[in-house]
Length: 266
Image (cartoon, rainbow, N blue to C red; front, side):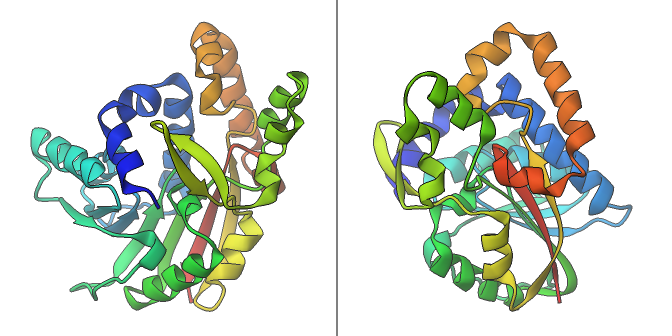
């Protein structure tokens, strides 16, 4: 995993993705699922893997949850820490460095109620590292705890059609190779693994059972089409509504921009 690549992109990440039209729509879909299927009236203890600039951690803390926000990138953690202080949420957000490729988690004072990872942080590690991560997470959770991860799956219908129409078949089916696939982040090459919902379930099956799989970004396009989405806000709203209607159809997650996998500690 290249720390320098993510350190370099951290200052502009919110502008490029968090505050983008596509980014907002896809993040809202994830939060809508959490509101319906995970969150209730009782505040939770949350471990976030790959917190980025802390957008999800801020939302969770505002709702009364206690968050341990982790990331491999020092610059991303600095962004999260600064936001927590700016919004008077430092008491609710603890920031810690964590290399998912070689994860070692200390035992917390109380087990985490929810382990959460958004928008492809787990795509930075291979299946062996996923299995190690599952074992580590089993040590810091208890029966009934939730794990909700959002990953880039092995196929994306939008992506394949886009590149095929432009005569670029290798790019159209790059996810099918699984990994490692070289992706460019801030002019640096980063190894990326594309995980199907089945592969995530398999990696975690010794300790966690699958509860649900949800498509995120089946109708809504990937973020590289942000220029189109910005110009066509009404069309994007229609696509977002379409995604909401199609969300119960789990198999669509395997060909969406992202797949949400909800697991439960056994």
